[in-house]
Image (cartoon, rainbow, N blue to C red; front, side, top):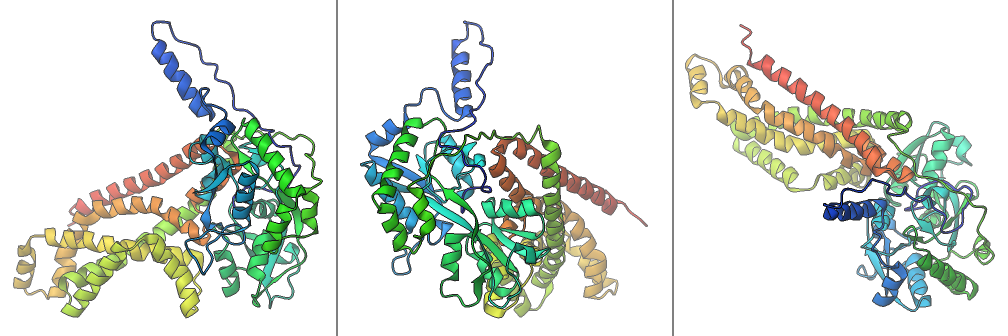
Length: 525
C-alpha cells in the first residue's frame, strides 16, 4: 500500500497490460534517412522501451545484480533503519528481495527512489530493474507495469484513539477527518465511499502522530503498518477486524516477460519451500491469510487502459480546480503575513534600537538560511509534540510560508527604504515632522513603490512554493496532480492542465500587480 495506488478489485494475471499505441507516423523521403532514424529512436523512447534494447533478464544475469527500487521512508516493517545501526537497512521486503535474488542465483541491490515515482521510473528504465515496495496487484497498476504473482497478503485496518470507544467502523466516522497514505487502496476506498473528510499524507508515520494529538479521528492503512504502530501503543487501538484483502506483487517493466516468468517461478519456490514463512514470522507477519499464497492462481483476465486527462478533462479539471482553491488561499494568507511582518522587520532593522536591530537581523538570517520544509515540520509537528500547540494544517501552512517569506520581504523593503534619497528624510525633519511621521508620510510610500516589483515576484513564486505544504496533509494543486497522475498514468496530460492553472493564477497576480503599480505612480493630489 505504501507505494501502489488503488483499491482492491478483480485481480488480473501477471503480464496483462495495455500496450501503448504503435508509432504509425509516415516516413520522410529517402534523402533524409538521419531524420527517420531520429524519429524512430524518439518514438521508441516515448513508448517506454527502445526497440534496440536487449532482453532485461539477459542484462540482469550478465550483471549478476538484481536492482530493486523502493523508498527508504516506507518505514517498518517494510524497510527501515534499526535503532542500533542507522547505516543498515532491514525489513521484510529487504529480506524478501535478498531471498528472491538468491533464488535467481544473483545478488540484490537496493535503489532509493521517491515512492510516488517508482512506476514512472520503472517504465523509463535505467535506475532499477524491478519494484518491491508494497505495490498492490490491481488492474490500475497492471496498466502501468507487469506484476508478478503475490508475495504478501494484506488487508485494510481502521485505527482510532483508544479513548474513542464509540468508533467501530467507517460508518461511525461520517464527516470526520481520517488519515490515509496518498494514492493507495485506503485512499481510493475512502474516495469511493465519500462519507469522511480525507486527509492525505506522504508517509506512514505522521498520520499516526496526528491521530494521537487529536488532529485526526482515525487512520485507515494496511495491516502491516497498523500492526507496527499499534504494538506497545496504549493510546491507539484497532477499530474492528481487517477488511478488503489484497496482494502485494513485484513490478517489472512492461513487456519483460522473460524476467517476469523467472520472478514468478522464484516467488512460487520461496512460497512452497517455507522461505516466505520464515521471513514473515521473523517480523510477526505470518498468519492464516498468508497460507493462501501457496495455492494462488491468476484470476480472470482484466485489462485496464491508461486514461487520458485531456480527453477526460471534464472529470479531472474540476478536481484540479478544487485543489487550486487551497493553493490560492494558502498563498494569499501566507503573503499577507509576509508583507505585514516583513515591513515591520525592515523598519526595525533600519531604524530601531540596537537590540531590536540585532533581533531582526538574526530572524532574517535564520529564516533565509534554513529550508522551508524544515520550518513547516517544526511549526506543525514540533510545536504539537513539545508544547502541545496543535495547529491545523492550514494555519501551520500559512504561518510557515508567511514567516519564511517575511525574511525576504524585509530585505526588499529595506532596499526600497535605502533607495529613497537621504535628503527626503532631512527635508521632512527640517519642516518639523517627527521621525515617525516622516517615515510614514514620506519615506514608506516611496519605498513601497520601489519594492513592489520584487514583492510581486515573490507573491508569484509563493504560488509554486506552496506545493510543499502537501507534507502536512494539505492537498493543494501539485499534490492533486501527483495523486491523479499516479492513478491514471497520464503525467503529460494532467501536467498540461496543472501548468495551465498555475499560469492562470500567476498571470492574474501579475496583472493585479501592474494595475497597483500604475495606481501608486499616479499623483492623486
